[in-house]
Length: 234
Image (cartoon, rainbow, N blue to C red):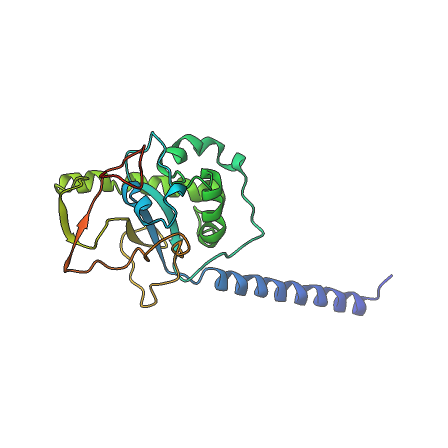
């Protein structure tokens, strides 16, 4: 049986280790969630296919007629937790809505693999915030944001409609829209190091999309062509 002195030393040792462990966990959490801003990114299927180096890789499912989700990306954070797997069954209840609003536009990538990549690269970093701390919650938030930011209606109300002839001031082809959000998902978040979001698929594209629009070039908002997605105006 331990003497009172030895018992006290043992208790103090356990307490010290516990406190150090708690401190380590807190410190790790702080490092894990240092990002301040997110970008909710939507893509236009009618233009996405035009930039692919291999146009045969492109597909637009017949049910897709609107802007689709590309991702929700914490800035300055990437692939935070490889140990957090995601399975198709995790998203079973969201599958119909995700398939409609967040489809893969590549023949070489199923929609689930697209979602899986987005979770590993970005969702695992967003998971440090309450409300996005699981694959299901992360994708639920993304779907809610898609409903909140109805870009199709906004463009239509502004008189901007898909066309092969009409151009608008801006860049050459309208491909993506990136909406800045704060951690609590309120609109607008400006950070001096506003970078580190989704790496664009440079190995697939002729050009690097997503840069600010130049003022001296027209922008085309091409229509979606399901049977010839890479030739929407031919």
